[in-house]
Every structure is written in structure tokens, then in C-alpha cells.
Length: 261
Length: 340
Image (cartoon, chains in turn purple, cyan):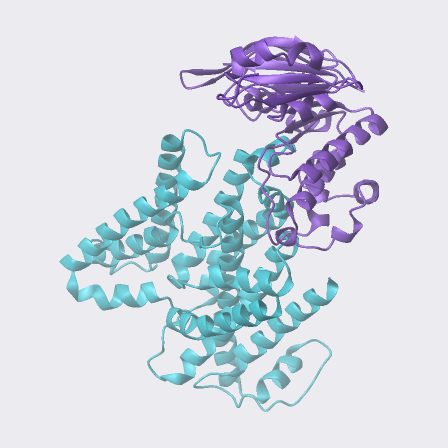
């Protein structure tokens, strides 16, 4: 269980300010959904948290700035699943998941028995034993995504960052991937931050949504409070109907311009 | 797992034996293994090899085999490492200008420096080739790092290598064109040769090859980590830029050293690692050590036909490696494609 906090995080690409003084706390065990139009700074914020882009301000885990920790210690706290993970075609599933243990292997060391046991547990939990010896190039999109999540889990970090985890998947596999993360989050008490475009899906699984626009945090709250037609119209420039299901699910439905509601 | 290493070891032993047994002069081939056994402590076998013949074995064939093995092992391991570091299967150990620099160094000595160095007791070509090779790679790396903003992706570095290599080659061509009388000498050097190998050459390259080999072996896990991309490797806690720099330095030092004594033997550094990947899998845990073994065996074997085919004038080994290696590699490529 670990909390994640952003204090005045700024990310600059040349003269473009991708993230502008982002403040926010993700409580221990909470799932925060980052939403916002393309270029809003969602990915940059996640990348700043794992140190992949230069940033100013502070990212804190359990109140301690990650900048004070070594790269390996940081990797033991925050696992990151990029939008387009690079999966070498000729690497086997097991080799790939084992890479997740890297933060725990010393520079000249090699993975130990306990590292292999962790990998076995993860493969068990995700029912991936059939893919151990399969080449990554021979896997489908859904299978690849499960292996990437398995690699992140092998990292054994209390915080999981997901950048567009469902963008390459069909609706069935989208649901599967989200259910997988939701289940793992319960079992392992993970703190999750996901950046996603599918507003309905994000709303279903997140405890809280943070809407970003041009690098700024512009709305923050429960899905029902953030996913409002006027808010979405303002920042996405869309016409939508928002429907509230009896079970609390918020459904965002795009509207055709030429049909009057 | 262990079976691969036994096979690789056996191939090296066979290559070494073949390398010392075959040659235009010296003892009858089947007497050679007997003589080698006889030389071992506690074993006495009448091999019928005369002292003069033993001298041929020890002073000519042995250093040639050992040097061939070292050069082949180094170029293959360096090639595999470069391919890993730049995530580019078409990269060879000469990518950043080591070969072009060594060629320019040799050309400088044989043209501009000829009047001065003719009377020297020590041949300055290897040293100058080594130094100019390192300088060339240093220029490439500095330019690539400066223009690339960071060494995060290898692409800028690869392109800088292409540019610097063509500039250095242009200077070399210019020098050669001004000194047509040494073209043949330089050309022979460029095509690569092991024929003049001595134990002195072996001593010259050994520290670099062993040092570079150890560093590359210790970075096998990092090479595997780099395969998933810089971002993910960094998110897994790896100091990517430093790892890349250390591997490039080791591979370049080793490459420059072997190129300085053996000339530009092409094809080994790109084909041997791929042969290993195609036959035994792509993890660098096995690719590096097996490239060392098969690279050594390949070059020792490739050095044999050159000695006998066109005796007494030898066929350059660079010609043999490409002429025999290419069809063999295409065959492996085809059988693997069919198997998949």
C-alpha cells in the first residue's frame, strides 16, 4: 500500500509546457483515471512519475520524493506500462516477464531463485503458463497486453501506472484487461493511475477521475461529477449525452451534430 | 542449455585442430595431433615430427590459429553487442567508424609516413591503425551525442557513424589516389590477413580482447533489458545511457585492436551472431558466449582454404569469409524459415 503525490509537476518539451504545475494525491489503494483530450499531458505526467522525461516539482511516494531514490529503488515502487510497449518478436514470454525483476538484480548479478518464483506466481495468477516458451511475435494483442501487465506485476511495485492500456484491444479484451487490473488491485492493494481515452470504461473502473487540459488539472472528482456534458463540451469540444445507470455507471454517448436531442 | 556449450566447445576444438593440421609446408597432417599429445606432460608418443616441422607448427600455424580465434571471437561478440545496443540487426562492429579509422591509420603510415617509418624496427601500422580507429569512433560518439541531444536513442549515433565513416574513407581514398604505388599494399591490408601472424600479434591484442570480452559477458543481462526499448528499460531501473556507453567502449576497443593487426575482416560480426540467434535463441545470455565460440571457430576454419587454394600467394581471409560464409548463412536462413 502506497500513496502517490504530485506537487507542482512541470514538464517542458522545448518551449511547450506539456504539464503545468500538476498537484494531486492518489491515496493508497485508490484508482485514479486520468482523462483529457490528446496532448493534454496525461502521458507526460505518467512519464514524469517514472523519470522518463525531465520534470520539475516533486513526485512523492508515501511522502518521500522519488528523486531522492536510485533508479532501481524507484522501479521497485512504481511500475509503468507504456502505451506502445516494445515486445521483441523472438523473446519468449518467460524471458519477458523475468525482465520485470530487474530492479531487484544487482548490476552484475543475475536473477535468483526467488525472482524465478515471483515470475512463476505471476504467471500462475494471470494463467499465462501456456505462454512461457511462446515467442512474443506469435501472440495476439490481448495476449501481449496480459504479458505486459504480468511483467509490470513481476516488478512487485505497490503503484501501477497504465498509459492507454486498452487502446489496442477490442471491446472484449478491453473489459478483460480492466477486470484483470481491478482484480489485481484488490488482491495486491495496488494504487493505480491510468490514462485513457474511453471515458465510459475509465468511469466504470476508476474511483476518481482527473481531467487534464493543456497541461492543467481542470476537473477532479467522482466519475459522475467529472463526466458532465458541459464539462466535456468545454474541454473536448464534443456533444455528448451522459446517462446514469441504476448501478451508478456513467455512460458517455457521443451525439451526431445533425440530430437534435 | 549445457548441450549448446558442449557443441560450441567441440566445434572450436575441431576448428583449432584443423587449423594446425593444414598448411602448404610442415608435417603430414595426421602426425600433428600425435605431436600435440606428445607435447603434453606425462604422455610420450612417437609422432615422427622433426624439430623443424615443430617450428612451423609452433611459430607459424599456432599463432595464426590463436589470432584467428581471437579476431573471430572479438568481432562476433562486438557485432552481437552493437546489434543489441542499437536494437538494429544490420549493424556490424565497424558501424561507428572503427574499420574506416583503422584503414585510414594504415594508409597514413604506408603513404605519408612511409619515408619516416621504413627504417623503424617495429611496424607502426597496428598502433597507428588502433589509435586512428579509436579517434574516429570518439568523433562519431561526440558528434552523435552533441547533435542527438542525448544518447537515449541510438539512431543519431548510427547516422553520425555513417557520416564520419564516409568522410574518413574519403580522406583515405584521396591519400591513396595521390600514392598509387602503395595501393596494392594498402588494399592487401584492408582485405585482412592472418598469414603473417606471430605470437607478438597475439600478445598485442590479447589484453584488449580479454578485457572487452569480460565486460560484454558481464553486460548480457543489460543487453536483454535494452531489447524492450529505452523507456521500459529505464522504468525498470536501468541506467540506459551509461550501459550503452560502457558496451560501446568495450566493443569498440576490442574491435579496434583486432582490426589493427588483422585488417578489415568483414562479415563475421554480422553473420555469426545471427547464426547463433537463428539456431539457439535470441537471449544475449547465450548469444554472447556462443558468438565468441562460433566466431572463433568460423574465422579459424575460414583461414584454412586461403592457405591451400592459391599457394603460394594466399587468398585474403576477408574474401573467404564472405565467399563461404554468405551461402552458408543463406542456407541457415532458409532452413529456419521453412522450420517456422
